[in-house]
Length: 349
Image (cartoon, rainbow, N blue to C red; front, side, top):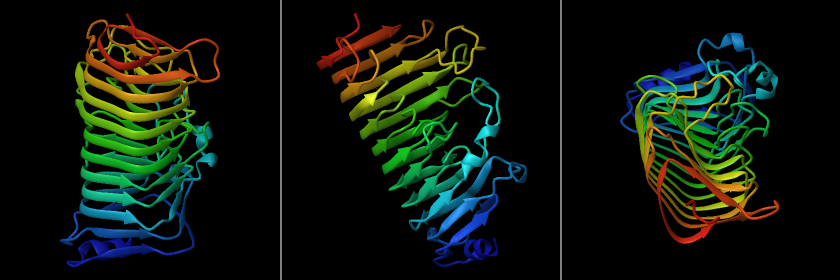
């Protein structure tokens, strides 16, 4: 931490190096604000392994970068969360109010930042979280955890604006990329996703006073053998909020169970109130999405009966059955839909 303090206080171009080698590290916070007029560079060359004694973590982060204007994390090194030693303590399956295990890399209130060329493997909880950031870019990342590892989202974005996730390979036990409340003006492009739960907006509507989500583009991505493709999910009986302006374009689905899905009754446990969701979803565009579906329902648009989805467009959808008998189908409820171009499966009527 002395090296970080020196780099942060330096008034010129500053670089912090983690050299080649393997290092065991407990929870650490890289705290700003810093004095440099140019971005601080944190260069990871070696392999950093997490301390897996959960009692050492006073907050659920391993490496946390906070309150920094101008940051580049790079170098080609590896963050190894050693999650296999602690996943047994995850009790979030079927329990809505659980404590998540530590996130490997958290960026909080980091403006004008980048993380690039980094490997993250076997996180205890999320691999990366971007929270309360502006103008932040994550690119050329390799993120991996086993398919059965719990809540190991690749990149989670919340309460942040002008975020780009680009040209990365992500395979985990949960969402490759997930967007929570307050995510605005987000571009996700060039992602290879799988295994995992796909690219998800949500879940939304779990808590009071959630910020709206708007302005999300997912393009030029390939999803392979994931549980979902591109998904929007909201909780039943939610407080009112809005989710709008989504563009899912030029996406390849390779044997994905639910390639296109809006689920406004999302409930991973059996204890949810079944009153309708009050998250208003609108202005959603699915264009040029093709490939194979591993389930009968290739398109599922199930919206709230109290707040039906508005302005959902499907244009040039070609999702054929992959290894299942019969043709793929579309299932829709409580949505105003428009169609154009190729429609496989046939449109909902």
